[in-house]
Amino acid sequence: MSPGKLVLIIGPSGVGKSVILKKLRTRHPEFHFPRSATTRDRRTGEGNELYKFVGDAEFDELLAGKKLLEWATVHEGARYGTLVDEIIPPIQEGKIVIREVDVQGFDSIRAHPLFADGTHVLQSIFILPESTDQLIAHITNRAPIIPDELKRRIASIERELTYEKLCTTSVKNIEGKLEETLKDVERFIAMK
Image (cartoon, rainbow, N blue to C red):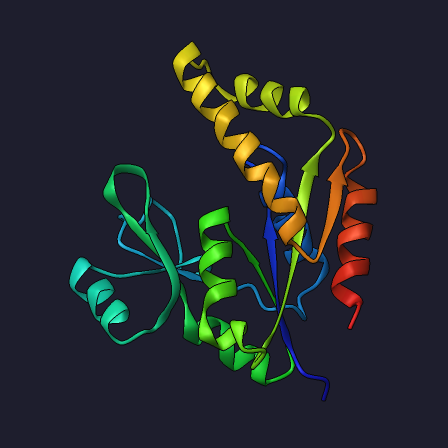
């Protein structure tokens, strides 16, 4: 069996990472899509497919036991983390593990001893927008946004775009050409 690997999908907010991931889940049941640990409340009708719901004490135990590759506190104080047990065993079984992360998660995972020393294969795909203007249009079309928040988001986008050069490859997500984007992503994932 060929050795497995972790493929991280990163890119700025609004670039289409979630849509790409959703399509990959449908098209590639052979890939492993790990759950995240989270302290946020379960939403109505939400199952256990995407998240392992834990309390604050259990999250603290995961941290103390070094059972998270990376973690962050996000919206309204909820914590999210990438579970080692959701990543490493599938890689050791020869599976391709696909994970969407933000730039902070990317930094943490690539610096983690399980990947930094080459013990496990780590590759990354940076999803590029067609243009910064297109990305800003996506964000402003989602919901009304105040000018100060828009300035903060644009600064964040510019900082996130600098991560392209740190990734193994990049793929441009062109409006109306999702199938081409997916084929490019799939082609890269298939590479050794």
